[in-house]
Length: 442
Image 1 (spheres, one colour):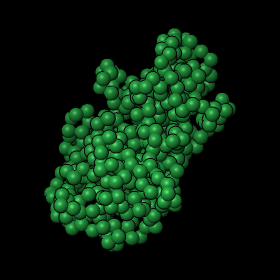
Image 2 (image 1 turned 90 degrees about the vertical axis):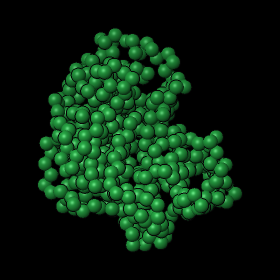
Image 3 (image 1 turned 30 degrees about the vertical axis):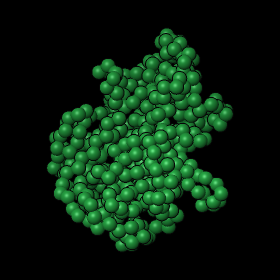
């Protein structure tokens, strides 16, 4: 999935200070270079770049009106004001943990740098080893330091079962420059993206997908509504949702997160960053960021769980490449809705709760940001789906993965067989939820 992140502006020299020394600073800084990324906004959609200075050149801008704008830039609290239990590691510690950052220990690679699997001593019992994931900042990254700081600050204070736990960090200078690393709890089952498109003949079961929808809604609700200062994730997507040993879903990669608008303000003005296909249209077009951007992204993700398709997939026929545009006519007709359900699942068994989850997605995808629900309201709706007797009986006892080696028959069912047995009132409810303006993609 293509990310868009636009860096323009002038370079500035900084002096490095460790987290412990940055008592009154809003951000840690280094003597290398950084970029003033907020000096301009440019937006890239489907490979077309449109530059903007206060106004967007894109068409179909959301007609949202904001009562007031945000000129101030809310930021995370200074590190010294946090009650943080993060460990401070040395480079030698992490070299030993990852076999000198061996390629055989590498489990991921991205714009930030590389992620390695490793083991460290358990602080509660030094005789035990604890498996961890170590993220190493690419030294050539111009934006990576800012994202590294954001992760340390946010995950140093944010504690929730559905957020990946940051165990510690490393910030050391050597002859080659600054070494910046982050140490996380190990998430043994990878990302939701990996599991949805794994090539081992299995995919996530429907009940597990519903549990993932519940876990991620709970995590976003915590960030938006339960912290002392609201946090906007800004890059919610399936590859940023990791699964632990028990298949619990946790949000990860908070480098692009921002503190939400202060009281009395409606949005934060910011450089447009995120992932094409997930970002809300009003944010892409204007740079005005609110928590409703995450709500939109969550709605896209729900359709990803339902269909087993990515938000943008250029390997598909042109009329199917944009997920939201593709599903729209099927959702309008409840008899056709089973056709959008992931063919690797049992469509007949999935359809009724799939309808209901699609209705939740539609509420998240309303064009007017103010009309989208809060994540606590979304969580309540997802909880109600999982409380249905036929699903409640499966929760906890089902296998998280199902084989699709022999599921071709499910994908070839006739239309009337796929729709048989579905309650018409559920279909009517879902159809009413979808309006002509419910989904609008750039």
